[in-house]
Amino acid sequence: RIYSKISPSKMQTLTEMGLYHIASLFLTLAITADLTEVCKKLQVLLGALGESELEGGLRKLVWRTHLSVCLLAAERGQDFSVFLSPITNSLDNISTTQQ
Image (tube, rainbow, N blue to C red):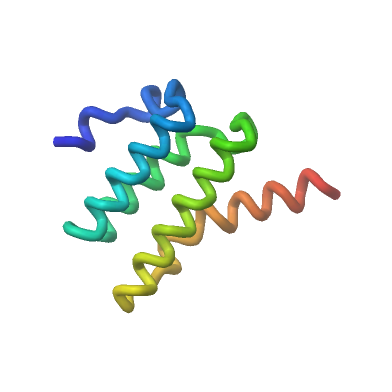
């Protein structure tokens, strides 16, 4: 039910505190429910933010959330390579813009 309440367009209007609460909610759900399903949905919502348009605090929070997803998967002994694509895409964008 929570998934349907939070759309990508709503994510774009969140403040840093709002994004923190959404990330905390989804990470808590990932711990107690199906990690893969919850984290994939979280990453879709984070992907709607467009990292290049984010301010410093929001960008850090998005990165921390992506890394937390990877850590949760690693702690459970799951393959976290499926969660790495947003991180590698961001690193590719950074390296491309700095050249």
